[in-house]
Image (cartoon, rainbow, N blue to C red; front, side, top):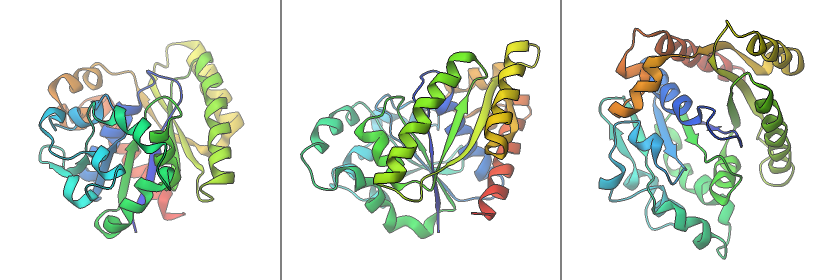
Length: 256
């Protein structure tokens, strides 16, 4: 059975897409079968996986509106070693089109049942807002991975996300939980970041992943080449950190 995880944070610019594609590539490198789903109409996770969103015949939009199955719409990223259920601007229309439909927040969950045996991990890149798209991701997930910078405003955004997850858990998905908080773009030279990191560990304890993703130029450069940093420069500190994070994730789900 595949373990399904949303990568989510209601604050923008915290590295959700970078986390999703690099974790997917890292998991593939350590021998896991991975499907990466892009639920953001910008399609950055699709492009960052070496897949041209403009050339896709079918996307997650078609899956949500039940005009295609996951098996029909997924494509393989040859360079990255995992499958991609991509997105493009079409997905913006899904927000409106889903509203009058039955089971609108359960469309993705239903669609993924057909490919459950094909993967070890399904990773979902969610948009920053709590939209019908994000809700579809949260309703089918076993848990949420929260990438966050160790800054003051990030803590405020985290409170909002925790409340959202509690609401979805209470009303729509009893399995949903925070799997862990991932500290990203971390610079140990900045005192505030160290302080916020300690606050996180003090408050969330074992919900904070041991792995820390450093601020890294190669990770930032990789998307312009249409690749995760793990593939673009495997020897970089950022790539090595994501491989370690993939290994930590594999260990963590053994207890689930």
